[in-house]
Amino acid sequence: MSDRIRCLNAEGIAAFERYLTELARNAHAAPPYDALESPQHTDDFGIEVTIDRARDGVPFGSRLDFGKYLHEKLSAADPTRISRNYGLWNWLSLYYFEQLCPQGEDGARRIGPKELYLFSPRQGYRQHIRHLVRAPWLIVTDHAENAKVLLLSPERGRGSPLATRSRIFEELAVRQSILNNKTLIAVAQRLYFDERYGRTFFGASGGGAGSARRFAMVVQQLELTYDTRACGVDELLRLLPREFDDYKRRAAGQ
Image (cartoon, rainbow, N blue to C red; front, top):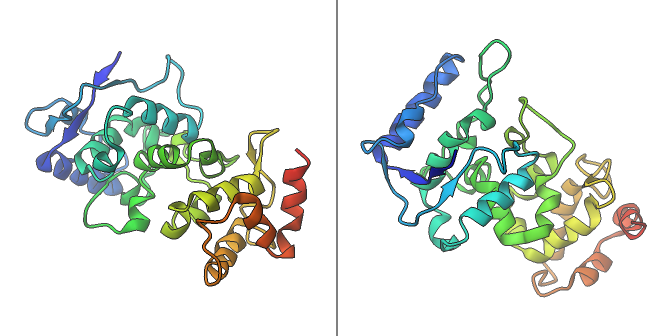
């Protein structure tokens, strides 16, 4: 059954935030799903868009699938206008809450940090980018197929693919200067994503030589000398030091 997207208003966002606070104390607290259609808690989105909690009846298998779905559904809206639409992302967070914070066998939910679910103007960039609904949409919208390196991972958590952020995401996406640079994300995609198996290369999410953590540190040094936005992908790959050679060879061997 499809539902029309709405936006939580100030009262709706406050009710959602109160619920998240309560859930931290009472893992069996029921989500306020009634607020999704309540005139008291919501406003019209302004564009008629309908969505489902599953795509073609099949649950989302990854954050990449989820991001592509949201990108497609919200394609009629101006990305720059909806990117900071707090009411929209909080409505979607409540709508998909069963997949973002699923119940365990005992009916309890293991809630994560509040910024995973609540999008607020009180937060900074690092909190905003961790939002479990907005981040997949934003990354797919900005990086298309290169989003795979940030949104596909062998790591699973809390019984739902939508509830987990990969370690590479935490190393790269949380750095605004990296996520906003299409060349750097394209290089990371080339280095770390194994197209044959649809996952990142083993070791890429660690802290060793040539890892995503090292990539984040090295590109900061390179940017003191080079305009990485103006570089091509191959050019930037050549600028990386020898510690990245193993990942270059793996990528070239695909």
